Image 1 (spheres, rainbow, N blue to C red):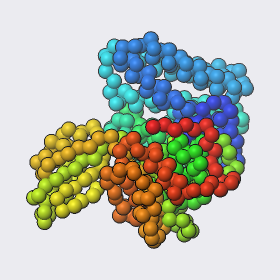
Image 2 (cartoon, helix red, strand yellow; image 1 turned 45 degrees about the horizontal axis):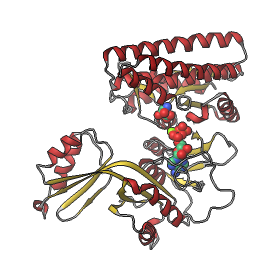
Image 3 (cartoon, rainbow, N blue to C red; image 1 turned 180 degrees about the horizontal axis):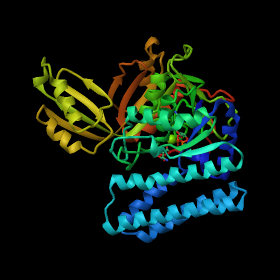
Image 4 (cartoon, protein in one colour; image 1 turned 120 degrees about the vertical axis):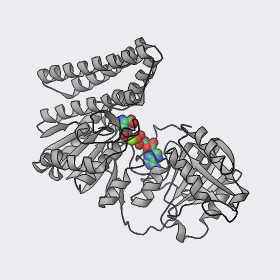
Length: 467
Ligand code: ADP
Ligand code: ASP
Ligand code: MG
């Protein structure tokens, strides 16, 4: 079997859903299991409705939800032929929007919006897209079976960023999903959403459908995990920053993990982990151009003759510097520092040390005050906000002389706050001021990928630079 995951733009309207169904049909002989995102923009809309409700603007929430309902109605009317099917699913969809309005009303009355409520509201997006897709596949004679992901994707209760409980969900997938796959059915399920053991709805965090796909693929020993999206594959940079970014034919699990972790949105940061565990190839493909080969992500790709494969970046980074003369020659210092981050469950991305100081970066500032207060017991603490990370990735980088020199020459007058050459040696990460990130990525891209190769240029015309 294979897993096929379709992102928001790949199911954004009736035409996109039709294209997705053709892609699924093409792979029929490999028994695809289909993981869907909400229709493009739906998650933002749902979360937005909950937020305006919290601010007491229930009327606005209702208006926003009505627009979203109309989008779904339009899709299903353009997809389905049978009037009775349309009527049945229309009723179901209207009922769900009534539920959503009740939820928003509750939020507005209380003036309170918990992460738990956010997850419940967000989950409707994926539940709606999959309901429409499964019904359409069924009408077209495909053996579709819709399975609610909350029956198997068991997570902890960290709402909005829930972590999968692998033993439990593996067992449930094998028990309740695998039999359908073995019987040749095309299982359709939601990405992104899950449930606690007690049955409370959770989500895996924004962009989490990729992660759902790889978790399911690993549990069911898929031959391949396909991530269908709106670009030709993994590119040499974010096409919204570098419109001439080029598609990569094949990259390693390690390269893909670093890129995803350091901001290449095309893959959720955790996507690669389950695939690595079972050594399952991941393919990133363009649902608008399904005949293109996409990017293959695998354990041991053929040795590349280029040092740098791709450049990723992320903003919203905070640098914390801890200085202490007591550190000189002292052991246990790093342990003390990391125990603070542990205590507040805040992951550290980059670390550099000198004799008297340690600098770390974090991208989750929720517990910053408490962290700084606790670190102050170890040394003098300085916090620098509004930083970003640029991450240059390539397996061959460590074996190639002069990469760092080229990086610094390309950056020119851009100030580098911190440098970390990953221990894994597939990446070099630079911390910069946030406002320099876009320009730095462009300069580095121009240095390492100067002339676009005809025919290999990703489709990017519609992308705009966001900063
Ligand atoms: P989906 O809805 O299919 O999950 P996403 O918007 O989450 O799609 O991810 C695809 C987007 O990721 C692309 O449109 C592109 O703008 C962005 N992106 C960022 N970095 C890269 C990269 N290195 N390669 C490809 N796409 C990238
Ligand atoms: N729909 C969710 C989001 O927009 C999950 C996903 O698309 O991967 O974040
Ligand atoms: Mg995504």
